[in-house]
Length: 432
Image (cartoon, rainbow, N blue to C red; front, side, top):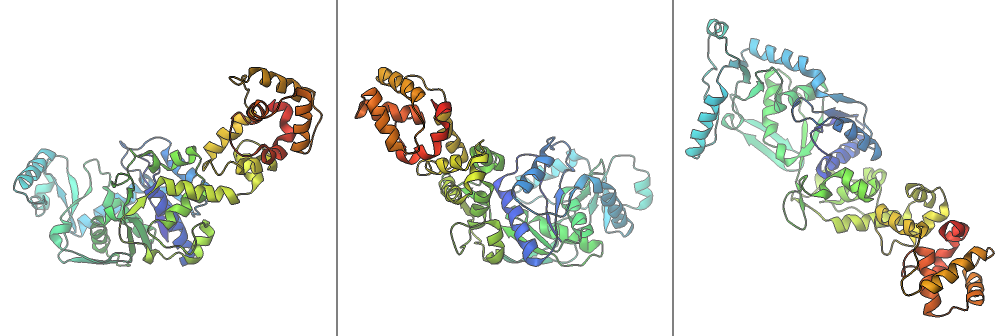
């Protein structure tokens, strides 16, 4: 079983989606199920509706998952396992106040040392604990031996007990901390492979320690992906970068298939530049992903999007643009030399069907053409229409070409009218 575990505290970003895509691919390659676990135990940071938005985006991107669960629904199991750890003397109640712990942290910082819990409450006797009325957290005892694990991408890691520390697993309100809830849920769901960002590497030994303390020794395969940085700034992509938001990319007119294509390509060497998610399943090898940070380049994504727009079914493209006519899809593709997104194509097609005010410096010609079109019979061929217009208006050269293009397309440049006309001839009444 694999799991994708997003948090409903903000927009789905490109790092999240890359992890979701890799989980989907590996679940297919390993013939294992994939679940979605919404990590929502931090109620103060949760944003209403973000959990459903995440699930909708996964469906839009054709990410197959068996079911979705909310981590908060499993809090009773988290608490039950914490009691087991307490009973087995693998964890202890900690009555240290936040002020006391903050003071120790500041002292450690002043001495340029990492802050670690000093074990003050670890050996309190049961009768003492029963007589303390102060609120308390529950901490797991630090391991006695080093925690080792192998990352399928980055190699071997070795953490000593000092690195792992005696960390909090239940807060004072008895809500589980991230590492504890994550470890328990991975255990309950029998997770075999975890794919996530390299930022979580220091969390891995803590989660392994929790499971081992509960007697769960199944080995989980870990794959920690390098960060994605902005190619322009060189900094890690964050929600301050518009391009980081998947919803923003969709709203800008980037196709899901293009986003998947680009995210799989980041740090990889695919056998071809343009491909689908289904094709990637056949050849993708996560072990060959670069260990260096990936560079996100919006221009490259736009190029990939344009190439997918070139091959998309014309009827489907027209529906995306708000029509249901194959000819509109073909018309839109004529603009791909100067456009690379759905949003840009919508603007081009919108100008064709927009109401047009007389063209500056060509007001008289514009009026003549408008009258001519309203009285013109239907012509299948543009050259025949052009002959008719010249005969009826006596316009020629620039006095004809510029206002004619404008009245048909809303702009004075672009693809040739002989290319455009076959796809708009049935809409002339609406266009004029």
